[in-house]
Image 1 (spheres, one colour):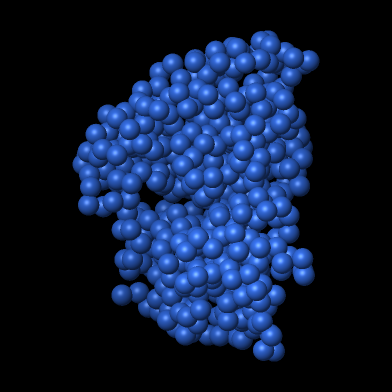
Image 2: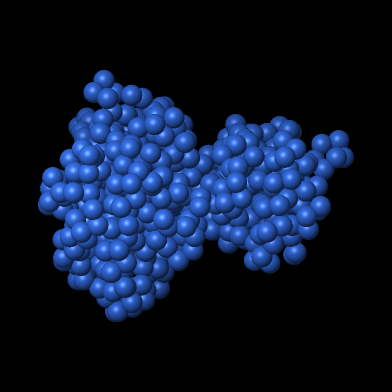
Length: 338
Length: 156
C-alpha cells in the first residue's frame, strides 16, 4: 500500500471541508472495498478522512411513513433491523444475499452505494481499463467478460455495479441524501448511479466534495409480495451473475403496482418504468411475467462469454415475480429455488 | 513518510498502546506489533476469513481494517478465548469433532463462530453454513466445522 495521511472528521461539515481542501483525499468508513483497492494500487489516495465516527448511525421512521437510514449504519445492522424486517424485507433479503457476515458487520450503507466494480481488469493495474485510467481502453469487451454487463454498456466499459443492497434500494425508489460545500441535496436513486457512456471513471453523480449522509425509503415497502433472487456461481459469498429484486402489490390476482430491478447486468441497478407500467392491471401470472421479462431485456446485448445471462435473467425475472406473487420470497439460507 | 500514529487498544483484556503507520492493518498490528500470530493472514483481501477477530464483540476481517481506525476498541483474538487454562467451548468442540485438517483457517473459523453464536441468527444447519460462508477451509472440513458449532451452540 502507498503512503497516505490519516485524519478524522469531527462532523459532517468538517468532513466536507476536509475533502474540499484536498482533491487527492478520500473518505473511509467501513473500508472493506477501499482498503482492498488500495492494496491493489487501484486507489491511491494521498489522505484518508475517517468518517466512521460521525453520528450517522440511526435508523428512523419518517413522518410520511418511510424510513431514514444513516449512511454509517452497518449492512448487518440494517439487514436485521426490526423496521426493515417488518416493512422492507426485500431490502433485508438483498443485503443478506451479499458478502459475508464479517464484511456486512464492517460495511456501511453509504459505502455500499459507492463500492466499485469487481471487473477483474479494473483490479489488474497491468491491463488497460477506462474506468481506472480513462482513455486506456477496455480489456473486458474482447476479454474474459463472463461476469460483465448485458444492458446499458458502452464502447468504453462493460463493468457491472456489484451491490445487492442497491438493487433493492432501486426497486424501492430510495432517495440518497448528500451534503456538500453548497449545502444538502437529495438524489433519486435512479439518478445516483450512472451508465458508463464515455465517462466510466464516474460511477455516480455524487460530486467529489460531497458526502452521503442518509438513504431514505418511501412508505411503500412491498412487504407482503416480494423476492430477492440472486443467481451466482457459488451458493454464498459470490457476486451475482444475475439478481432480481421484485415487488408486487396485488388486488386479488391483479397487479396494482409492480417493481422490478436487476443486479449483475449493468453499470447500475437496472430498472425500466415501462415494464412496471405494463404489469399494472395485468393478472399476476406466468405469461404476464414472461412478457415483462422480454421487454426488460429487449435491448440486452451479450459478449463472448456472458450471452447466457440474457436467458438467465429472463428466467430469473419470471421466477422472482412468481415467488413475489405467491408470497414465498427466496430464502437467503436455504438456497433451493422454489 | 507520514508520522506514526498512537493507537490504544484493549486486546484480549489487556490495555495496549501501539505506534503504527496509517496503512497498518489491524491484522498486521496484531501479528507484527503485538506478536499475536494466532490470527492468520490468508488472502489479505477479505475473501478467506482467516483473519477474523472480534472488535467490540463483532466479527470482522482484520485485514481490511486499519489499526488507526480502531483506536479505543476492544479486540478479542483466538489467544483471548480460553480462560483460566480452560478451552473456550468452541475450541473444545473443534477438537471433539476434528473440525480441521491443516488448521490454518481454524482461528478465523472459531472467532467467526463466536461472533455467529453471539449474533443469535443461526438456528438450522443451512443458516450456520450461510452465516459462516465468509470463512473458507481449503481442507474441506466444513461438515465437522458445522457439527462443532452446533455442539457449542447447544452449550451456549
